[in-house]
Image (tube, rainbow over the protein chains, first blue to last red):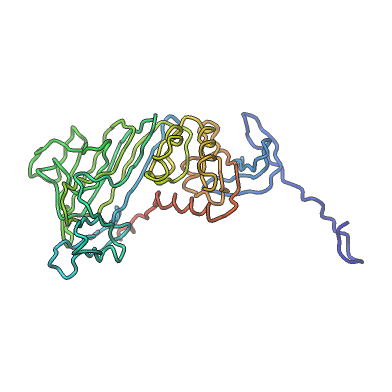
Length: 62
Length: 319
């Protein structure tokens, strides 16, 4: 429990639950845990850490 | 995609879309406003005056409306539009307009003081001399070349316009002006060039051609140079990344892999990638090889790219 003081409700927030998104990668649909989204021009990208450990922005299927 | 389109507009004092452009300078040495340039809309005009004793500083230099040359030149290279090592570009179209004290020589034989693209160090676009003499605008259907002389009036000097479309394969393209070693001249101009090149991995980094690109054999081995800093094709994205890491570890740059459609970002995040670049490349993914430790580095990359790919708004529609 990480709440401060006493008498208050316990802080129920654990690690934030990441949104899962399916992306088309290497010819297959892959589930990724998304850290955020960014819009560029007509395109929307979802952010996640790829298998190679690099911060990656992948075009959103939505 | 087998080919990409390269597009560049270079502005030397006057706009392409201006309805009534009237950029001019004063080269009458008796005039009280000698050396002053007027109605400079974007960029700077050019002024050649070799006499630095009598004219140490011209008014247009002081007010930042001209670039002065203190030596004369037969044919002056104003810019390198592209320089592709091991690749070819295909020049397809250009439009160029200039204001200057001179017009065309003979008929359309030699366009003096009209900045024009040249695939080499000589004036290539010299359509048939004396073709359709005294008939403006001149159109040479064989060369795909159209020339206008004084289609509108400016306060001082002449207006020359060339439009060309065709196909020339070349590894290098320069923007040149035929100055014929004249002194005490000025010119303002705008040039738009379209060309194609084989789809390839690209180095997206605006470089100074003389300082950053030509001195490095390593760069010239892995990708070509383009004024716009985007259409710089190479053979292999990994090679481009490796060389850029080595030579420019503290600058921002990007590399586009046209096979995976991945845009690699170095000292950059997607926040600094302009929308027009995303529209042009349409990457499937962006990968941050290194986040910027100093945002000014990323901003310098963005500012330089935007400057070299100026999106000049079209003039307002007619009522």
